[in-house]
Length: 384
Image 1 (cartoon, rainbow, N blue to C red):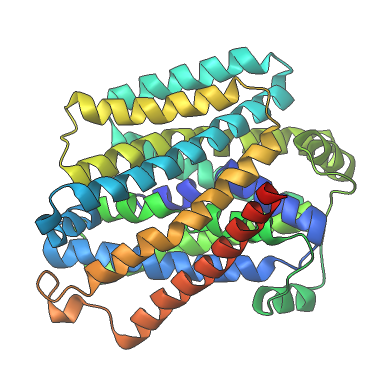
Image 2: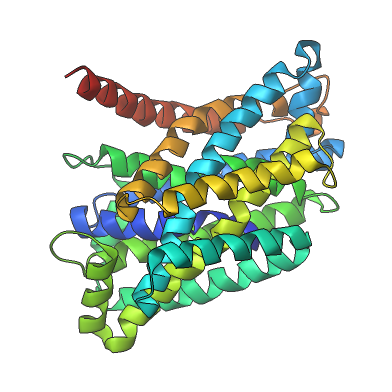
């Protein structure tokens, strides 16, 4: 179960903190349904990826590489590039989130804090103890979740309104980018490879229980974050969020938000580079001891540092990079769909049922709809 807390930690990062609280601040409860869809989608996709490992002894990346061996390394390399792009985008938001939390806590220079966070990430990943990292990330998820539950109590929206918003879709004007961000920050593409790799040795029932508990916990935290965003009035910013919480629940409320933002960002700053490297190992066969494996996670950290040292608005960058991953999601999901239904590699009892196939295709369709819509609007803006 503790291993599956990595999955919660990976999608409860600064992207979730930012996108969810901003959604609550700007649109009230209107976008809660997106979290319902994204949480269930995470369960469906993660279960399929992990089922492949239990059925074959190979993780998702190895299975995809084997299924496409006639093309050599071409398809695995292209898929890895997509995952690398997604991880690098996430890392930009991760480091910006961690540093923003530290700035709120200390008032120190963001530039120096960025370098410090990057250095600590490099040192921890160089130690190579993924089990220790998994335990550490799990603890952070639970602590941060408890903190935001307390904060959300102050918003106390009517229970019936919350239930309705969780189930009934609505599309407030101007909310498309946030919808994509909420999807991208919850259904994390690299988690399908990362989670698949830590499934070995588990039974189907153990795996399913672990995924349901961990992902529902993460989804609950996301809902709590959105509800906490109801407390924010005016333009959304980290400082504004901290100020509102300090006013509503006491001076320590702002400190709690700052710590949660830092904890989420730092935890995810370890996860994204590690996930990119694990995906390279899985898809391309690069061993952990190779220089290529280390270059992958160093490259992801370097991208995050580059954005962290820039003068871009952290909130804007964090929301945009989540949306980028929401757009990449259908690509990864299609490969997962083909792999889990491969008759040559997957025993019949482990292949998708009709309902499971429909669920996966539904995720692809919805993410394609909103992702494609977002890309189309972006193209129109460029043309103008």
